[in-house]
Length: 257
Image (cartoon, rainbow, N blue to C red; front, top):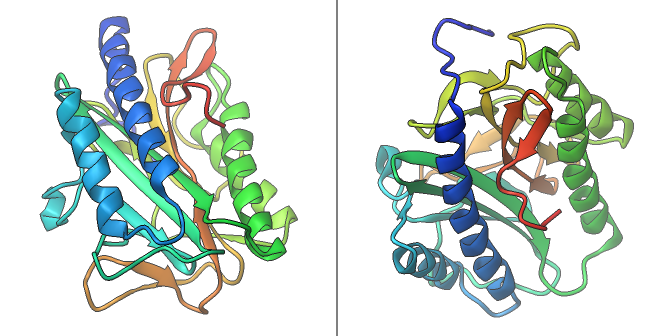
């Protein structure tokens, strides 16, 4: 599972470029998050994301990727990832809204995701949102120079399962840089002390996808939207993180937890 043959480490200059792209991405995401309110259509959110990128002379990473028809993935409630924006889908009070956005800037990709609540959430919805966000922090906190990739996976899985939830297994995080998806894959489950070393220069998109019920998923007839098989709620958080000699640097942080 953990091939090391095609992992590309980034130089300090390349990480600096990733950092600039990540700042643009974070600014675009902040604008989308602010607009993710009851009554807004998911297509309106997509248009906001596209406009933010255009204004900053960056490109949306997802538009056209394997045929995906939008700049932004918007997944609601039991939708895990890859929700397609639509004028017919308006956010309702109490919805969980997962926003997944990628940026191409100056030849480098960055990737980020966040789940927000529209208005007041039910206690169950608020809890899975909180646990998923905190599981991402647990994964990042597990990163140590010369540690192993499995340390991240184990930390995420342990945190999520201790809370009574499950991690999605069909989809995983990934390396990122000159391509949107690079080696190594970053599962949200695994054993500590296994896998490639967390060498300085390694850049990863770490993205826990957490279900309130079972971990199984299925894809809808649109060929993109992935939902929980049992209809339970799901949440998704993601950061692009660079490994440095001093520890992990969260490139897409910019003050947002």
